[in-house]
Image (tube, rainbow, N blue to C red; front, side):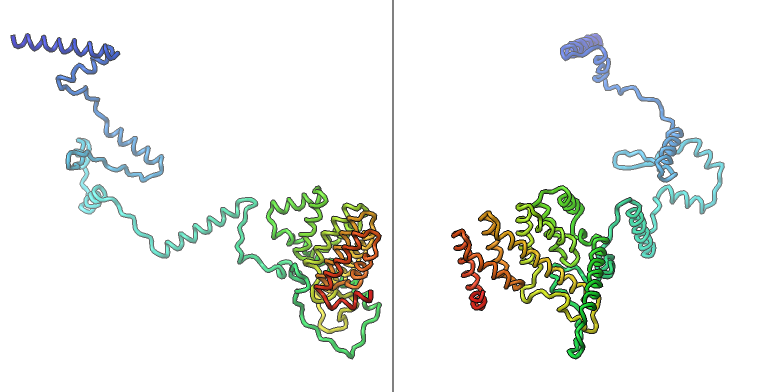
Length: 409
């Protein structure tokens, strides 16, 4: 009876399990999978693994990856202890047939039990490796086209690298030149000699500017984007943008940017009123801010100590630049005088303001500028005459020593 009741209970439990599986949406495969759960029977064991084939596959995989050729031994991990696998019968027979020496046995046992320790490299080897890595990195950088890094130590001074007679300087009148020895007893040069030396000095000045542009020193302070931006402005920019770009170029080094200064002077002498007024305003600010010295007047080339001993090419370049700058400034004042008689009152008012501004800041051409300013006191336009009177009083308050000069004019 006991056996019968057990069978009945087993059938009942199977039916119950099948009903539960059907309720959950299972099928006959799920029932077969869960059939031996209550009995405790283990699932069917897989077939035995061929260790020799597995060892060969692992060795091929290790060789293909470029790792060590020897395949490491595997150990089965049991509870609390790690024991090595038992040796195969083939391995035992091979060991019995082979009779290696004691030294070989000790070496094999050491290799199997202890991993080989890598020797620490010496200091000399470390330095060699670091030097070799540095060389390879340098070679890689040089191999990249258009990519070359130079440190600040490798850069040469501008004078030595480009053979310029004068270092670029925004304030040309502060350039230090070698002292000259003048002798009062020596006779002054004749006009022919002065003309000859002036031509020689102008050739030196032009060669200096060509050398400056040839090596692109004007563009070294600019990045690649700024350089392309300036060139695009000079070629296809608006009038105000071109004037501003030329003004900035001249301010970098006036001695080495005579071409840009010449372009500004050409714009000053244009017949177009708008272009001429814009160029006159920019050149006037350029003269007052950076080109004209504040402590002295400009000198002609003939007034320089040409007969002094020890004059170098740098002296002749600076003297030629000063002579050309004096002539350009005189041309600017002539254009301003012409515009001061313009029919438009606004243009004449601007010129009167420019006269007073230059008189207030720089001593160059002060007699001509003062004459032009005082002359506007009798202008037909009362508003302009009143403004001229106000500017004269303002000038006398800043420079009271000019009262006698104003009364004479």
